[in-house]
Image 1: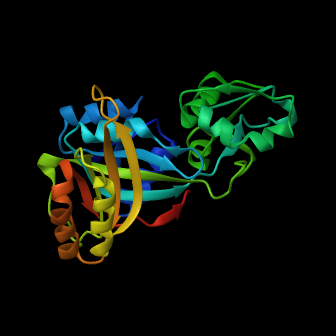
Image 2: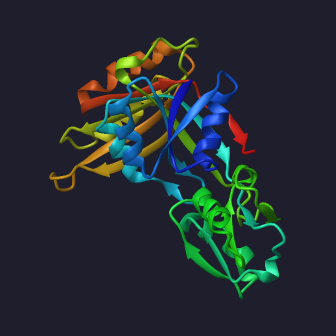
Length: 281
């Protein structure tokens, strides 16, 4: 069975993203990881496994450390998943919202549901390492008067009651997940890529970034994301991470050649098909 390393445990949004990408193709076995660095370490034990890693959210923004993890690893992006994040208020069977004195979840989930809890000021919000873990703790310890914010899949796994559905403030709350594979096990994609993630270090020359962006535009490349990260040990110098969208692979290859005079240390982090925006289950 295909192994897929995820950040979090069963019922997490990472697992849902894994099912969305792989589940329709073949059965998968998720490998639970406590952190994103652990996801990358899982490849040292099994180069043939895959990984799922969140990279950005429409509400919280970019997860910057994950760019560095990717850039400094042997992992490559082979796909992406866009998932609508729907937060649900869960509790043990028989509990009501009025019974709750405390609700636990990941800090980001708590933040994204603030408007809902302003209507329930008697409830104390408590940070937990993972949305799904907060649900599992309720089940394992049979905690009464305590709720959790997690996915509907977590409610199913841990046999919890859903007291309120979709309590996130912003209903356009999507997370983009990257699908990863070790570079030594890559195979040719069945479909021609139409998206790429690259990074580079700019030359010390006035207007270098402008020249890069102009060259990409002249070749008809659509820039869907640009993110800068400081280079450790080199003051005021940066790596630039770009996501590129294109219709012709040959044109994309020409664009990469055209920007070479203006950049240093070009890395192609992945060439893949653009992901479909899914609702979560």
